[in-house]
Length: 194
Image 1 (cartoon, rainbow, N blue to C red):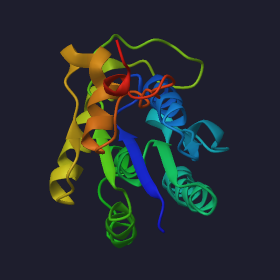
Image 2: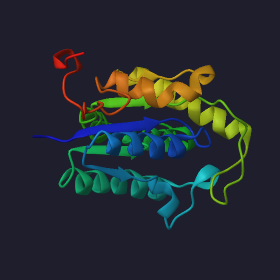
Image 3: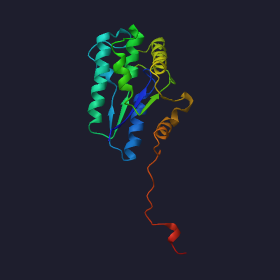
Image 4: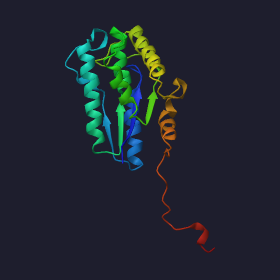
């Protein structure tokens, strides 16, 4: 049986990583064997953010795919903190669309059961890696939205005002309960005598 792949997409600084860990803990409580594919860009040995290069983004894109393949080989659910779409968006934002990469991106997008678009809902904070220029963050976010439309992919678009409900909304979109089923430890109460 093919694993279920879920990817959180969106620009940097919107809380995808925090949401990923929250969602992972809920899925573990539901007794799913899962693996988390963390943000690949943080491991890139080449320049990222506004100084990124074609080589850096190609490294990120292909490493994302490799890590998803490795995770999918051993787990029933793969939860990704990013996808090929938003990794590709950083390249498109910096230097335009690349026809040689688009078939790969389009093909790989078909493997996600659910893409979840996380909106900008809080001010950017410096984390030691990501760029804090608001215009850059907004530009990448707009690029992601354009690519979602261009590749004609379905995504669950979360709303900023509902950020506390996001994990429940994602589980609902997957058809999963938000809490583990309660076990009746004392038998069926209808069969007890008064």
